[in-house]
Each structure stands twice: as structure tokens, then as C-alpha cells.
Length: 507
Image (cartoon, rainbow, N blue to C red; front, top):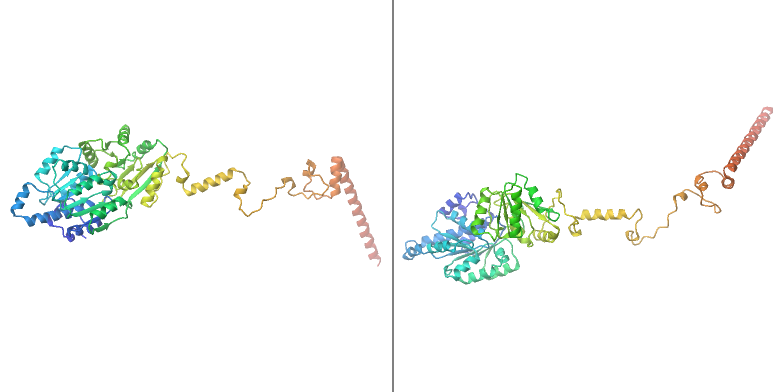
């Protein structure tokens, strides 16, 4: 399917061509017709699937067509000088809002649609001037938007299309109450487009109250990870994460890497330690001004900076082409956050790698992540910093069995009663090896070296007795007596044979 087949108007097609969009993604194929038809939409899809164009392109077309209908009227001429906000797109982070704004400007460059971004961390006066000039589409973060609404700088009473992008992330960041207050400032009758990569219960309740008979578009299972992303985890000794990161980044084929830390201080520390090993890195987090964050992001996109170290505030606002690696320096305690982090790579149909570091106290986080994504993350074992004293639940089944066999071998050659089957009888005590091949007489003593020496002899019992009583000299006499007896027996047998021969000859 092509964008022409989706009935996109020529000015937008030209903008898409400039953005090198050749054909629509699955979510765009299913979403654009529904939005153009005026339907509410519930989109469940992972990051990197083309969601921005899925709602931006039809919004630009609907507003453009509305302008054309009103063209030439006196009301429209007046509206050109002070345009009312007709579409509002809410985003959880500044980076994501700016990214959406940049994309919309590309898609709408050949139309008369105006758009602007309203985010915190920058001068409010610049944004006020943009609003005074007029904007058809406003892309905003909830906090700064509420400030301007309270200051009477923004009027939302003319909004026709509302977009909630990354709604689950807004819930996680505590913006959900601001979102509800913002919605209360809008008309009841409007088209609502709701996008979320995950669907926790709170989001499901919100969907039920906001959307009217929505078209549901679900591209991938909820909370799943894109198959194109190759995932792996390193189970590390405590305090060795930085050493492991330095070792991995020795590989010069890793052209760009996005490293996620849990805290702002941790991001700054990782950045300093990377600089010590001559790896260009910059940090991006909430303590940085918006200009600093944008500068770091631009340097990363242009390749000036090889590594960008970020907290989760930037997890859904970084869209970098050819990003090959995402590294979780700290595992997130919210499994869905892992999905969004690694979704920064493997975008637009390309492959990527997601590497995670895990210390012993983070093992429960790893278990929760694997439960949510419904797959086991392969462990990389060939590295110099393996985890010590790994808990039993984190060991592989084969390792557990091997440990069991090893502990059984330490207890000796005899198995304990606990190791034997329940129905078996206790074996009798073993005889000493000295008695294994000895057939003793009742009156024979079982001790002494002489007994051991003749245990396998075939001599008559009386010879054994005489040997036992008389010692070596008695044994010699006995052997001499036996020899003389044998000689006398053989001579007697010879005389008998000669006598028999003579009688035969006589007959």
C-alpha cells in the first residue's frame, strides 16, 4: 500500500516525500483512514512503529480541508491574523513534544497549517509570541500548558481534535490529574486519539471515559518488545558496571549508544567516567535546562557525541536514526519502562541491540521484566566480572542440578537414608575386604597375618591347622611328610602295573 492509496492530499504527500517516507507502516495504514473518517482512535503500539505520522498526517489534512472550505469568507480572513487552537497534542516529555513538532512541520511544509511546541525549561515569552501569531496545532507538555491556561494565555475552547500520546508514561510521571484538568477546558464534542504502548488498569478506565466507540488499532501485543531488537543481560559483581561499560565501548563498531541510568547524579557520574577513558559522552536529565538538553540531543544525532547518558525522562523523546545500541546501566523497577527504553533502537524497520547490566539487588527487577515481555533475556556469561553468590532463584536449572550432584559427592561413597528410596530396606553392614573370599571353619580364628596369608589356599584343613600351630618349621615338616607319602603312593601304583603286565604275558 502507498500513501496515495490512503487518499492523502498532494501537499502532504510532497512533505512526506521530503521526509523520505516511501510507504506507510502498519499502524499508519490502519489509523489514517479511521482518523480521516472522524472516528475516535485507540492505538496500542510500541515506540518506533510510526505513531507520530499515524495521527499527525490525518490531522493536518482535516484542518487543511476545513480551511479550504472557509476560504474567502470574512471570518476566515480575520482568523488568519489570530488563529484559534483547533488541535492539541499532549506529550509526557519535552523531547517528545519537540520531536512531534519537528515532524509536523515537515509533513505540513507545503500547507498553510501552523504549529508550535509549548514545553517547560525555556523562555515562556517566546512561546507567548508564537501563540499570539496563531497556531492551528499545539504540541505541549501538561505542566507548561497548565501554567499558560491559568495565565489566560491559551484558549482551548475551540479544540476539535485531542491527541494523548504516550498516555501510560503521563500516568507514570504523575501528569494524569493535569491532563484531566486540561480536558475539562475543551468542548465535550471533539475527536480524541489515544495512544499508549502499555495498557495498565488506570489507562483502561481513562479510555472508557474519553473515547466514544473508538477504532482500536493494535500492532504488537501490549508490553511486548520488538523482535528486531537483540536483547542480552550481564549479571555483574557489585560495583563493576562502569568497568563493563568501558569494556563494551572499546568496540569501535558501536557508533552510537544510548545509556540509561536511574538517577540524575548517576547519569553525570557515568558521563565523567566515560570521559576519563576518552569516550565522548553527554548527559540529559531533568536538572539540565531545555537548551542544554536540546544541545546534547543534537550533538548525539549529528555524531559529535558518541554516547548519550539519559534518565527515563528522555526515554520516549529520543528519535535517532541508526541508533544501534541501548544500554541499561540500571534496570528500571517498572517493567514497562524497559520496553520504552529499548524501543529507542530498532526503529523504522531497522535492527538494534539492547544490553542490560544487572547486579544482585536488581534481580527481582529482571524477573518482573521477563514476566511482562513474556520471554527470557539471554545472559552473556563470558565476561570478567561475573556475579558472586548468585541467589538460588537466579541460577539456571542445570546449574542447580550440578550443584546437587556436587554436594552429594562430598558426603562420601555411602548414600544417607534420606537419599535412598522410601520403600528400600537398610543394607547389612559390609564385611571387611579380608573376609570377601575366605571360607572359614567354625573353630578358626579370623585374625592374624597367617590367616590373611592363606585365605585363598586350597590346602587341606589339617595342613592349615598344623601351620597355624607350628609356625614355619612345622610347615616344612608337613610338606616333607606329604612329599614322602606321595612318593610311596606312586611306587605302589608302579608295582601294581608291572604285576598286571606279567600276568597278561603269562596268559
